[in-house]
Image 1 (cartoon, helix red, strand yellow):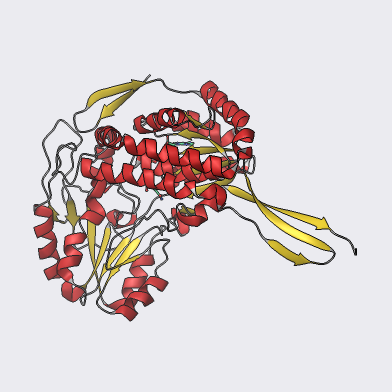
Image 2: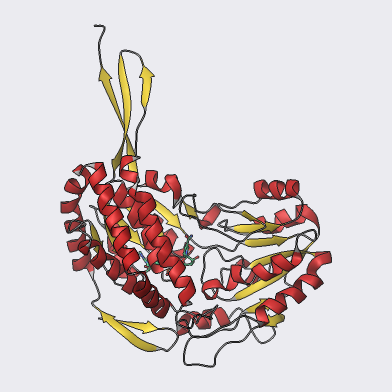
Length: 453
Ligand code: NAD
């Protein structure tokens, strides 16, 4: 059994059976058996089932939000937003079965047409930070394209995925189309990567595990999409609305206690604005409510585990230049206060590695060129923001920064209908929007010789 711990209390909140290699093999076999009928189902019927699943998840939104808030330690208000996004994701991709079309291409002597075929059985491996939302980003387009799936949630947060499977069955999804195998990555995840009947792995997690998945998938030439780590820049120019940028910046790092691949954890501030920006930042951070995830007023919860808190703490040694430190409860719970280190160099460890906790660094810069150089001086390229009152500069910066997702005068990262994914070592492929649907298909080209007549 897996003991599922509630990070805000350190208490066991549930025990779930731990899958091993035999269970993964059984799940893949069930998925393989179910896929031909799922694929053959009339597109409108598949769409209707996906709408029913969206409705059913929506009906249980409050209970699912509370479960996710407790299991992942996230504020209940955020959890509602995340489960709401999962519902919207199923609804968006419910249009997929009827929207996947091919092309006809003029060629000599016949007609050439392309089809978007499902791949078969897809292995989905997800992290603990946004458990149900990220699962929905993969399950929904994979099913819409006519695939069946085996979902391996993170062992720390398996509960919402198990609920998703139950709700899908109750909503009428045929047995075997969506299978969930909670268990350790090194066993269940690796077996999915190696399994000869799995056509593709869609993975979200750390860049380190992403590398090992890419290596493992090479053996059977599996398709792979990878959503990995980040170390994104929040670039604030002196001509920006500093009060607005500083009021928003903490939530772009400390939301989900910094356990967010899109965290804009390198705050680059144009030198003349640093003093004013830091004063504004302190005001917002000192007012942040850190505590019980189930309290409606809470803005930041605990970290996911004691081990993870140790890792985060290693970035803030005794002699670290702590400029701002917010509050956090004493315990029990894996608490860590929102922390800002300043001034930092982009070469410091805290500015180079993904901390995945509530620790931001502030790095001063001089002018647009240095801002671009600093923003791009990282192995990652996932998200980021530019704050400026100059529209032309905003667009110059947007084109120059090597990143998959960028916001201007905003820190938003994900919308159901727009592509999300990384440049460089932040990943391969895109989730959400129309692009993701295509990633769960293979293009088939059919030539029909029609002769001379
Ligand atoms: P992780 O890489 O440790 O684990 C992710 C998943 O992979 C888990 O389900 C885990 O059990 C599994 N896994 C571990 N080892 C495996 C192996 N050898 N083979 C197959 N599967 C294996 O990541 P995490 O700690 O759960 O999540 C944090 C990381 O996820 C951060 O780096 C974060 O940036 C990244 N992330 C990225 C995105 C994105 O969309 N780009 C979104 C959320 C999180």
